[in-house]
Image 1 (cartoon, one colour):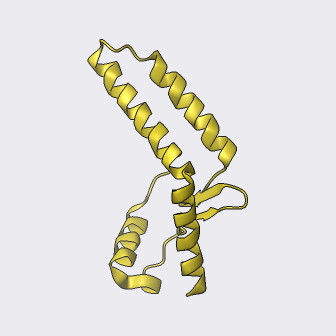
Image 2: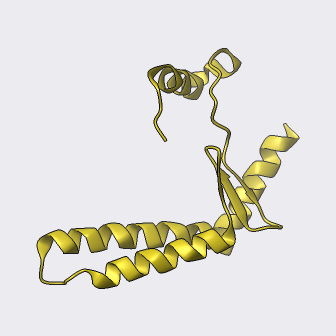
Length: 107
């Protein structure tokens, strides 16, 4: 997803406290604990999609040769993606996301 210049400027301004004066088309991330779905920057990541992504990146990582520097780097990138998705699925992280969303909704 490409970010145009105006959106980038508005996001920076909003992060510095401009708030409603710097509208962006991006939503805050949130987690729906009932469905196991993460909503992040307008994208919906369901539990099944996350599992498919883990399987895909694991297969890609397993194809990398340990003796080649370039494929070692790709294996590290795939492992990073795997770890990020697994972290997102961690129950402690899920409860933190749910609590953060609940706190924002209460304000």
